[in-house]
Image 1 (cartoon, one colour):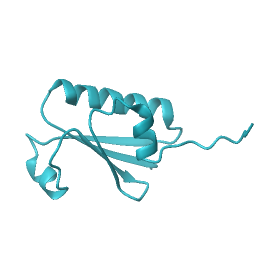
Image 2: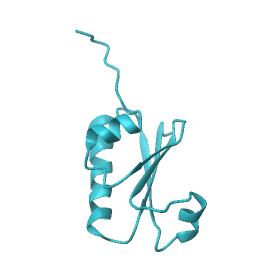
Image 3: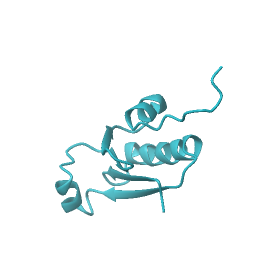
Image 4: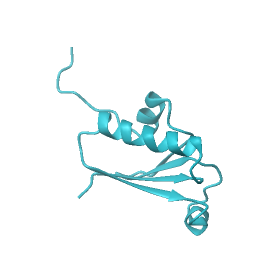
Amino acid sequence: MNKYTFRLYITGNSIRSQRAIANLFRICREELDDPYSVEIIDVLEQPYLAEQEKIIVTPTLIKQLPLPLQRIIGDLTDTQKVILGLNLVRYDADFN
């Protein structure tokens, strides 16, 4: 079972969409020790899903699990903003 579940809403194959996808997978690889799953939803192909989530701007990332739901809008370039905004902060056992 995945501890982290993400849903990324994009619009087509735009540069911003590609950048958001690449940045999300990079952040997951580098920052998460736990298993994760990513679902990418193109709002041009599945507009009803975007409507259900009230997505009005893309790219939008929703962290579904662990709760609470949290959203980040943009191409996820600012790694620190994403880590803090989604509460992905790791707590190390060594406190110096």
